[in-house]
Image (cartoon, rainbow, N blue to C red):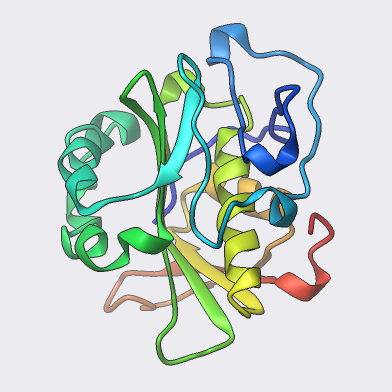
Length: 208
């Protein structure tokens, strides 16, 4: 399930060496127009870890303890109940391949994803969300960039995700990133639970 995110341009980079793996973002109120696309694969310290900037927005690997902070805000971010779509097990078992964005210790966004244990080619993004105050800054795109780059370094070739057919913002966001959009597929998640599918083939992705 994907957060309704505003379509945005590429993520912002501070003037620091790429090897430091540091990415900072203004809030929507402070967003700037000039943006530079990073080569994400070159800016990861390792497959699933990123950097930190004091006083700025920091992106790091998730931990099981992040679940309570996420589940405490997602209904408000979505404007409707969505907590049932994110059981605690995702943070208990897939934190290593998930990402947290924070500003001064306060949750600004997250991406919950994992590499498939059954399909050695695939990785999957289950749930991603951005605080409304940080939408339109490139943060959602950067979380995706980082996950895709890490999946590529793990030997994965395709990224998959799904969303509901009425989530037009998420569909537009994934199209803008280069995902192929399929469906809606009727009864994908059971009777009357139609879903739109997303698939990105990493070798053809122009951003890495």
